[in-house]
Image (tube, rainbow, N blue to C red; front, side, top):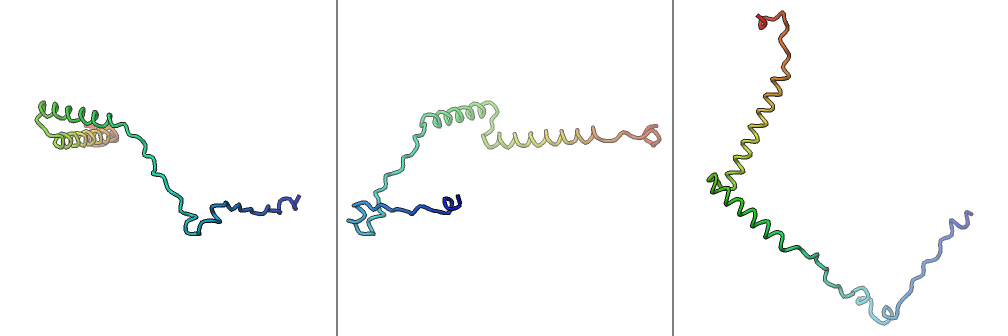
Length: 105
């Protein structure tokens, strides 16, 4: 059994007729085909952009803000909501005053 595992078959290299006829500099150079690019769905991005621009136009007519001003306002309101939630969380976790303290009178 050991003889079978230690025996490695010899590597056999087959030379083609082209390899013998051409010089070594030309053996490795094979004509490369241009890589195929995946086809993109060109209809979707322009439609999405059109919807986005139309939405911004309607919102700017309604509130008078640009897209960047609207984003800044949204972030400010979001930070205010986070702060309010944190303040509520802190006040709800505050320990109740013990009955013997001065605050209970």
